[in-house]
Image (cartoon, rainbow, N blue to C red; front, side, top):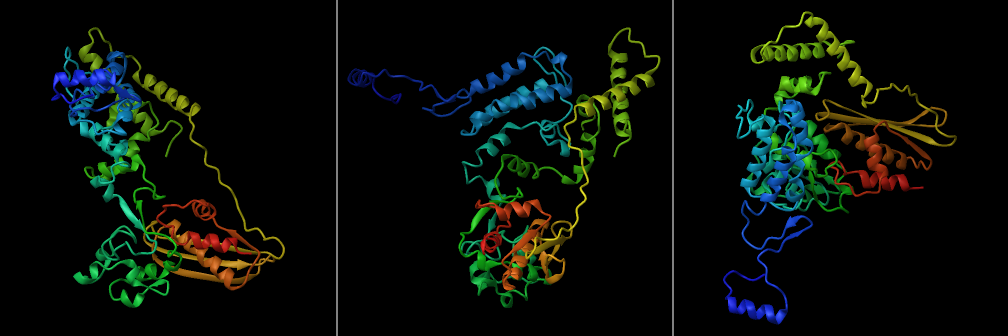
Length: 467
């Protein structure tokens, strides 16, 4: 491969000396074109052609709107994903793929033009926001490249800091303790010379110095800062984590949610979720677009709504159509058939109530029980626990106000406080009983989690390993 500006005689000489033919196209590697010139829409034209061929094999008239949406979501929209994981496709290619899928969805072609009833941006929203859950290609390309391109703006917006030594996290400006910077939670304005101080500057004897912060915050925030076990952080580096996932790990699904939340109003979430939760056929749900009885009323309403629309169109556009004699009976049979069919093939697990009770620990062992209580999983949190012997007798207990925090955070604090109490009492044979599977998994696993509540996990592990 030589530059197009290279003299032809020189090219011939190089070919004879190297015994290698000159080419203008390096071909592909693992299905992705090897670039040797400026990228344009012709470079990745084959991606568009594959999408076009995938949809061209289907007769649009044989599929309902719901069927076409499922086909786009399941097949044609996944074809570009392989290339998009490593390459930023030209905007023209992304728009061309969107155009192909959009025309297929609305039965639009060069021979038969049809009106697109809903804006494509709305169609590409998740179902809970009033869309059909299809993917807009430009956004999809950004999301798939997010793990490679660390400088993408929206990726920075979705990251928090997980506290370690505190020497890289700015105490007032960075996101590290809750959903907002501490500067926004302060009751007074913060001086400019203080804004750039790091968390490590506020740590004294392994704890956040309350003397330096109590004049800035309400009591609940002071409780949260004072309860942080910063002495256990010192062996770990500060680390960026993904804020939109509960375990702190980046996923493409949550990255796409971050982009979508910029342009939608989440207030309508419950309205659209109720529509999609109706027990009926997908094509009926799609027609509506945008609790339960034996035959639930929402399902009956959806079927009636769809049937009336169907019959109305046949009356207007089909010659010789005659209204049915007993439409109520037909609608009833439709509802019964849908209900039976969906429940026979349902994979949703049936909820089972499990009755539990406190069990006595083994003889000469002590049992530690801890629990938490938090308001709305993000506001005021508390934890508590107690130690009992094999006779069920109370030995010691504790309770702590943690300020603002979530359920999982409070569970972990409860375990940490309980293990410290057992250590102070020189308990060697200890059984720990907690009702949070998430907290148990975090404490017992040996993985280095990027979990946002990693704070006391190493200390809990060390205390559990003591004899």
